[in-house]
Length: 153
Image (cartoon, rainbow, N blue to C red; front, top):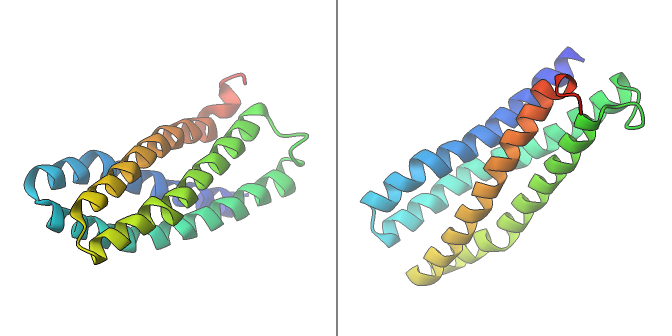
């Protein structure tokens, strides 16, 4: 259990922490200092480095989450409500990321390649909103994981 829980927590830290940094620290500074062509190229580079980590985190979260639930908690029937909420919100976060990856991120790459900066800014704005939603959901999931058994839910 300690190995699974440690890997699960590390994967969550990578994903949620990376989103928080990108959304709350990097984004405002990049928007303030960089013109659209440079800003969009910066974001493309950041996403190209970060998204493989997100895919790995998703895989690790799924494997370790189901491993802990099935092997140590007695399955979902025996797990607390916080585990069900955490699982459901985690899967929602994964679905949001997959939409982000396969739709607005793809549009961002296409816009940058075509030097269509307006379309790129639109795609980046959509990504920003989706990441903002996932940051909030990620915080809720982290609280459920850390304090769920003590919240009485």
